[in-house]
Amino acid sequence: MNVITKSLLLRVGVTESCRHLYNGSVSHFHTSTNLQGVTKKTKALSVTRLSPEQLTRRKKRLEKELKRLSKSNMRDLRPIEELEITPQLRKDLISRRRSRQVEPISPEQQEQQILFFKEWTRYKWKEVLGECELLHRVEKAQVFALSKLRQESEELYKQAVKLDPALMNHAVAGPLHTPPIAGYMAEDGKWIDHTDYFEDKEKYSQLTGAIIDNVKAKNRK
Amino acid sequence: MEEDACVFCKKAVRSLQHDITCDVCDKWQHRTCNTGFLRCGCRHASASAVSSNKKWQLHSAVCLQRYPRVIKPPTDLEQKYKEIMGRIELRKSLLSDYELDLVAEKHMFEKMKTMTDDEKKKLLAERSLLTMAEQLDVWTKELDNFKLADKLTDADKTGDETTVNQKLDEKLVLIVRQNWPGSETKCWTFPQGCRREGESMREAAERTLMTCCGEDVDAMFVGNAPCGYYQYQLPFRCKPDYGVKTFFFKANYTAGEVMPTDLISEWKWVRYDELPSYFQSTYLRRVRQFLIPS
Image 1 (tube, rainbow over the protein chains, first blue to last red):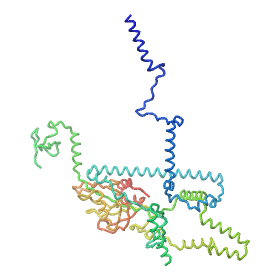
Image 2 (image 1 turned 120 degrees about the vertical axis):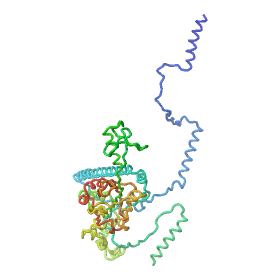
Image 3 (image 1 turned 180 degrees about the vertical axis):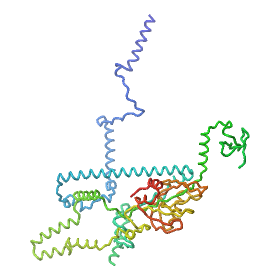
Image 4 (image 1 turned 90 degrees about the vertical axis):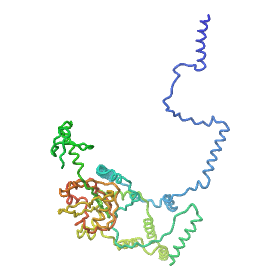
């Protein structure tokens, strides 16, 4: 009797102890993909689930942000001079005062243009390939020269491979349409300082005033 | 030369026999006397020993480049591209102030046809004295009166190739005929000079340029590294120097003229495609590897 009850108890114990842990079939078990230690993004709390306190807190936070953004120094951002359009030009664009009357291009002309651009890309591509080849050849020659120098002497090689700081500030002006005229003295032109100084208006208004006064005095002369 | 005795057979070691010497005790042994060295191995070892004994002079050569000062006229394709792009840009653009003034003037003259004399006078007084067409004439005259410099210099007309002020639309390079001591034949090369003790190769190149071409020439050396390499054997009378290893350095010409010095008898500024008529074939092959034509 004891033995039977013991075995029965054991069996019951196992099933009973398991029951509070899991109460379903084996197919319900699953493992996620290999996360590598990184967890999935947490779901955003939907508004309906928030308590009234949380809602008021959110509202306050948003209002604070709005107030901060609508402050005067945040709104009047510094204008970029290169992108500025004069008010007259802005009006002209709206009123179409400056719009050009152009005839539409015929389809044959358009076709010719497209064919020409294809020829142009072919020409430019050839040029680019030639340049790449050239650079490759030049680089190869330099690498060869450096290897020969290294064979000759390690010290000379190290000196050759050093960075030349004079090359950092090196600027080159390209070719022009005509050569410069020998002994030509260019005339000085008028210069009025139009730059806007936003940081310290009081400090620089004096400076600009002085320059304008100078120019006026010169003009009077 | 002292008579060395072979350690093994005690006989004299002669110069034409294959012998091996010990670096430590300086004693000699015939190759055939129990050394285990083969004939081919011995020959190879002796050849490499001879080559490492060769004395090479290290030279720096300067490839002084003068970049073009004036643009070349465009090719047919480029000209056509310019025209087409100009047309497209014109179509996409807005009217400028000048064009607006032209249009306004046209309207004004049309209006004036149907006006009284007094009203005409009043209108004309408001505007400037000249019409747009007259203004254009004034401006074109001003442009015509301004004289631009000639693209063809005096040197181009006379065919003088020693100055820098010639062929302004081409990339030129300096070549010289150097006076090497003891040699009568002179050939065209880049200015070349031997490296002195304590100099780097680039410093040698800078010094070479100054001594060969005078102190007036200003150049910007493009980096510390050489761009090319060329080696050649010296004639027998130049013993102990076996040959010369030349390292080429590129330099961009900035200002000054080449002055005659003792080291060079002639110099010329030539285009890259003219080099084959001046340089030797092997030298040209090496030099062409690092030259970038315009």
